[in-house]
Image 1 (tube, rainbow, N blue to C red):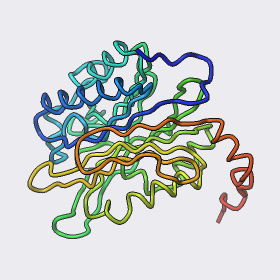
Image 2 (image 1 turned 45 degrees about the horizontal axis):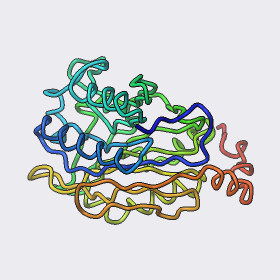
Image 3 (image 1 turned 120 degrees about the horizontal axis):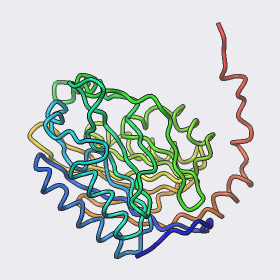
Image 4 (image 1 turned 120 degrees about the vertical axis):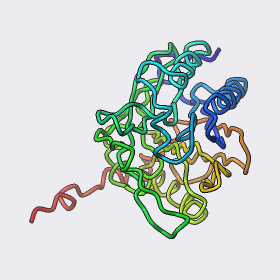
Length: 284
């Protein structure tokens, strides 16, 4: 068991999981549990899962596996694993019942080392795009968008939450950084079509421009006859260097986040102190 103390550790060992989730929730959770176990064996103090780790199919089918915020097989797995192993778990995303009975929220839940839920983030930007016949998605048909910018504390450090398509909206990450975040989580299921050109570039950009660690667990491979994810789960440092990247298979990547290095980098290159807020607040 690897407990995170209340004092600020200089480093934090973190694991990001890569999965190929499909339509069998029980099987998805069993494979997620095996990779969570492997992360703990490798000394991870915080483990992060990808978007849709419990179920990945057509968006409308999420209504069949919707879970209550305080119950359900995926929620129980996250809570019980965190408490049993004394680690923090960032739960990718799980479909939670929305205020509209015909929709769900795409929700990332965070549990601390005692199994207490300490954060909930609902995906804010919904993937409504039409690149071509094979790459057309409309998440807003079945998903209710979130509205809140969410951070949580781990070992005395502030960390920010986002999900997948949020990656394309840098203003969200600026808000998270300004709220004190030093680590940005981006659990994702990037399509193959967009991922091959944009995934690494966007992750490294978010790390560099906010001088934050970026942690991006990912879905990869064929989920059904219509959906393929790019994968390449990644951990990036505040300079934009890739600390760890997953190959094209299920597994985990592990890295030690050094917060003294982050603070020193921000001191040597103080661009975050040079933001001209007045230029961004333009009134007609």
